[in-house]
Amino acid sequence: MPRPHPSSGFAPGLPAPPRLARGTTLPRRSCAAAVPAPLGTRSREALSDAMAPLGELLAGVRGVLLDISGVLYDSGAGGGTAIAGSVEAVARLKRSRLKVRFCTNESQKSRAELVGQLRRLGFDISEGEVTAPAPAACQILKERGLRPHLLIHDGVRSEFDQIDTSNPNCVVIADAGESFSYQNMNSAFQVLMELENPVLISLGKGRYYKETSGLMLDVGPYMKALEYACGIQAEVVGKPSPEFFKSALQAIGVEAHQAVMIGDDIVGDVGGAQRCGMRALQVRTGKFRPSDEHHPEVKADGYVDNLAEAVDLLLQHVDK
Image 1 (tube, one colour):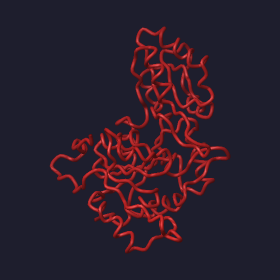
Image 2: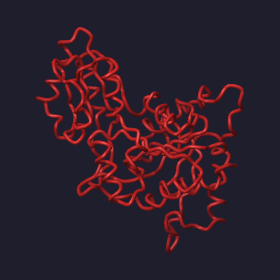
Image 3: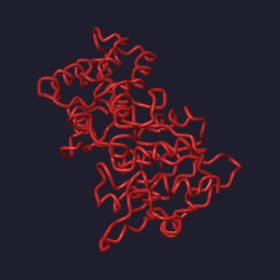
């Protein structure tokens, strides 16, 4: 059953911006059209007609959080592939008055590697614009004096170079890919079971994501296996953690009620953002499944075909 929009994210004493019922959907382009208009290039009149139902939703938006995988590009062999229209969509956003932050659960690559890959695909992005779980986890480990046993991908290991991993008193799990072997899972299990107060930190908890070759298991199923085996609950660093979204908003100086999240994950991106008081649009790219529009617990504030269409919508209504 669709849940009401949280009100806790609105500033005290200020009226909430006008909004429509959740689940507003932009009309799909007709399949009968002989030559469909290129992404992001429809006429102003056509865009106005199609996007009018979502106009009120975006009143007061000052900042945008963008998911990366499945919204900007699909990862995969050779560096992955940019999703059609997304490079120019990001450029248009950054030329606008809106503040932009990239908010990702990527845990197979360091931020530097991820940004380098995106720049090679044509995106205007810098490492300082990205909120990612590995650096956030390192800060937590330092603050709490935790020494992790790392069950992570080699591509992200450099993020933990300054972390003491001797005599572990916790486990950090990420999307380890091929390193999710029985031996490695069992080693993490043994560390946790030997601790009086076991701590399991998970970089995100996604179920799956999309690469160019198809859907891939994410860290969530492996996190759940350790939770079940050890009788504990993991601490999630990354989406949908409220603290993760708040850190991204603080980085651009925008309040939750002034921001919109654009993502492909109905639970991690959309549900997580809404619980923080943000609005959220789901794109029909990446891991999106048609059943997401009928999710029993989470309803996006709006559904768009892709990032290019979301940006068309945003830029028509900025400052309105």
